[in-house]
Structures are given as C-alpha cells and as structure tokens.
Image 1: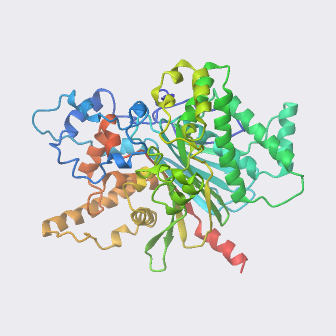
Image 2 (image 1 turned 120 degrees about the vertical axis):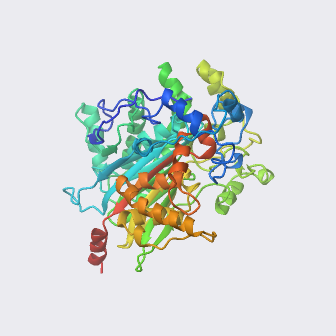
Length: 563
C-alpha cells in the first residue's frame, strides 16, 4: 500500500529550487502515471489496442516471466506484488471486440505519455566557486506499476563541491523508495561536511536561526516531498550530524567520499528501522514509518566532483559510462555490479555470513530465501529483524498492519537474520575527455536493452551521428521490401530525434518500442503504452533513467593541469 499522490498538474514548468534542510515550501504530491490518456479514453484504447489474438503483443521478447519478477508469487504477497498471480482473471471480465480492430495512439498521444515526467537541467559552467565538469542532465520515468514504485533525485551540494544524482527502485510498494529519494542525499551531504560547518548548522538550530541550505534540488513537479514526515526526518538527520560532531575531534582532514557514501547509506537504513521500532504518536506517521520499513528499495547514486566520479550502488539498478573511441564508435563501461544471484561474489558473501547448514537455503531459485531478487536493499525489515521483533512491532502497530498477511508472513528458513544489507558497493572512476555521459537507470531499462545498445543510442542521440551508420539486420534474411522499410524508418527516425528534446525520453522510446532490427516501431510502441495497468507489469517494469552529460573541455583541462 502506498500513499497515492494527488491530482496531476498539467503544463507546469519544471523548476529548480534552493531550499533549506527541510522547508515548508515543498511541492504538493502529484500523480506519476498516465497523465493525459485515462478514464473513458483509456477504456476505449484498451478495448481495441489490446485485442491481438495472442500474437501481436506476445511476439515481443519483453514479456516478463515469473522468474524475473522481484518477488515470487506467494499467497502472503498477493496484495503487495505486481503482477498478480491470477492476472488473467482481470482480462476475462473485459468485453473485447468480437473481431480484431486496429487502434493506435497517435504520435502526439504517445509523446504526451513519454514526456509527462521528463526533466532537463543545464549546469552553469561556473557556479561562482568551481568550473563544473557536468554540462547538464536529462531524466524521465515511465510507469508500469500504478502508482509507480521508482523514484529519482538530483541535487547540487551547496556547502561542499559536487553534484548528486540517483535512481531508486521500490518493491512491495513505493513507500521505501519515496523515503530514500527524499532523505539519502541529505545524509550524504551531511557526511561530506567539514566539522566547522556541522557545528555552524547545529548552533543555528540551537539558537533558532535560519539554517544553511546544503542542497539545491533539481526536481520535476511530480517529484514530491512528504511534508507530514519532514519533522521526523529532520530530527533523525540532526541526531546523525550530532554524532558526527561528537566523533570528530575538530582536526582538519580530507573527507573520504567513499567512506561518506557508505556511512550515509547504512545510517539511513538504520534510521528507517529504528523509526519503525519506536513508532510515532501520530497515527498517520506511525503507519507511514512502518510501511517504509516493511517495503524495500534499491539505490544507485552518483557523486560527481570535477573529474572524480563515485558510484554507490545497493541492489540491481546500474550505472553505465558512455565512452567515445577515437574512431567515433561507442563503448560501455560498467560502473556498478548487480547484487543478485548472477553475481558470484554476492552469492559467496551471503553464504559466508550465515552458518554452513544454511548454504542451500539462503539462496533458492536465485532469490534471497527463495523470495527476494536483490541481495541488498533499504527497508525490507522482514529480511533483517528477528522473528520476535517483527511480531512485537506488528502486534503493537495499527490494525492495517496487523491485518495484512504480508507483514505477518515470516520468510522460510529464517534462522540467522539479518539476511539483507543496505551497504553500498562504491566504485571510483576518474573522468577522461572520452567519457561523454553517464546513464543511471533502474532494472526496467536493463531488462529490455543491452548495455552496449543503451550507450550507442544515447551517444548517437547526443552527437547526431545515427544517420551515418550502416543498417544492421543482425543476421536476419531481409527482403528488398523490408530493406526499403528500414530505410524509410531511418528517415522517420531523424524526425523522432528532433521531437525528443530529452535523452532519457529518447532512450525510453527505444526501450519500449524497438523492433528486432533496433528501430522504433510506432505500432509496437502504441500497443505497449496502451496496456491496462493490470497487464502492463507483465510485459515490463517501471523505467527510470538519468543521463548525465560531461563537459569534455573542462575534464581535459583538469587532466592538463596535472601533467
């Protein structure tokens, strides 16, 4: 269950705001899904575009089988996990046309859906303190769940140097990903602050003076903050910086960015757990902190300061660097590792952390305790707390929690918790002039596209070089008529590039609409965007993307200064 955002605001320009630590001047909650085409229009679209005699939609490789869903279908998870186990029942009651009818979204309708959540920010080359190595970034989201469980964040560090960007993939609801997207950057920023600045902030709070703003957020109107929880979140953050002040002797020392990122991730997850255990006298907040703790979220965050790029990853979202070679071609450099069963080091880590007699049960069917796909995540206290603590919190919690089968369900073979951690794996990369951009994306993108295709599509979009590349047919036998069609598509592709003013939007268009030749098929794109919400999750996950473009001239200047 998740607090659903309020009515959507159409046509509101995106904005950049510089706010104090926690301000009352925060945007109201807004809906994150299907902005323009809904209600009766959606019903009309569903009844036509989704009728396919099991061939049009099913010919796509993007159908998601059960073994790729974040949770396995379990009776206790029925109300929390999409897709539902008996999803076919929801289609039986619909009255579809007796004969196939073709109805496609028009290009303007497709663009309205794809562009509803896009955001772009151009970074000033000189911000008054430093020359920025970032030209700007584009971000976007496309929901599959309703409401969307993904979140994104971007902010400039005002009291230190650098910029923070991150994507967050929620599961068992959006409560945890929402909380992490609001709070994590504050914990990172505080971890990076020198001792004197922490003292200055604490003294301002003590005396009731205005606080120094430590982050400048770059937010789409749909990226909201929870005003109700702001005081609770502030108090937890203040306790953290007070402890940092007590631990620090005051001696000036360079702050280790890697250590700061790790400490921030772990401390926020600890606070999420503690807040749920302590509870709150306010019934709304009490239920909120419990929903945050019992749901979960992965996180992939980048901190860029000059030529120093750190990526902190917890879970299975990814960071991919786009590198342009001397011949103009593009190559992908992976800056994060998936924390799942495909990572042998993660499997070994898990087995070493638990007794040998649990070696066969700690990971079953490529899932943690046979249930959870990511091996690292925020929240998910069902995989961290002892059984006694879980029962005590649930029994003393609100009725909504006590009556929910998911929260009362204990994972099988649950003997030596915790089985899950939010500690990130941090990767460092020193930027070079050939490093042109960074893609941060949730697994909804990587499930549909190979990393090399992602980098190539973004690189060609940013440089406008796609029209000069030879057509690749991937070993298919292509007739003259089909080749003519591909050439026609490429001509149309030029106009689609111009209609996409956002690199993340352009990437989503390819992720959802690509055919077997790697070209966007409008018919396919229309059908995928027309799927009713109870079916959409069967074919893809939520997709959230941030594309960060680097300033090669500035990066090169940094390099020349050190030679």
